[in-house]
Image 1 (spheres, rainbow over the protein chains, first blue to last red):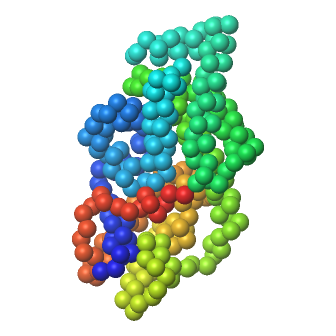
Image 2 (cartoon, rainbow over the protein chains, first blue to last red; image 1 turned 180 degrees about the horizontal axis):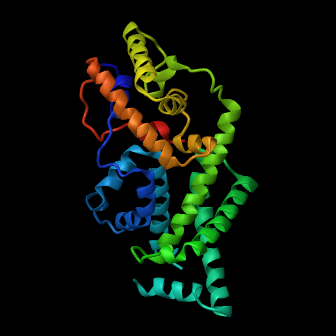
Image 3 (tube, one colour; image 1 turned 90 degrees about the vertical axis):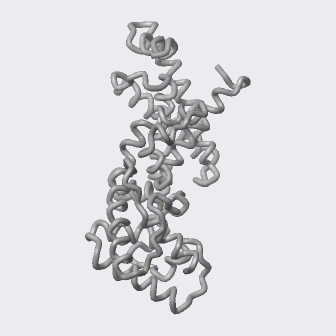
Length: 79
Length: 216
């Protein structure tokens, strides 16, 4: 089977644990702190992890928040 | 709740000079966060100079309004500053989505459905084969026969035309969550329709390449 069809089939797959955008956004500050602390955010919030694996815009928002927290945690940028 | 978060709340719920000082600190924090996030996304958003600064500053101002309005929603599940950053991130994200939607509306002939490019959207080259044409045709038929008009509209815009879902939500004046839920249901229906025709290999649920496709 061609590459695009495999990708397309993967795109069609949905995870029943997926909590959707609203819940992911509601909890993203808690999730991002866990990620920044090196805790297992995926196990703690499997539905959010499933959503972030499928939703590009929400994953980008969480990446931005994690980046902010990591920069804040660096000794030379702490306020 | 951690002591720093309690101090933030005391200040923002305080009176007179105490509250003014806390609000000034909050605004400075939101400006810093909004600028960092706008700069982080600047390259992919093709945004620079005064446009970038204006978007970041407006995001900080709008986030400030949201934070103060929703102060009572803070439950101490995270540090207060992390909760606050979330508002800045979401404002920048929403404004960039609206900007992309405006650019896409100007550049994209949305009335024409370019189904032949579907394989390219999912990583294949532009070359065509008989099998490829058959699969595209099967997807097109499944979209026509299995999806509701709304699901079909969003599928064509997002998947066939490659419009990012957040920009699509902004263009249609609806929430990203609503677009995602409609697409989630559409994906399930299409998977069932194509599987019933024996066209799928049965990949593991939950593994998707969609994030790469929808991201701006």
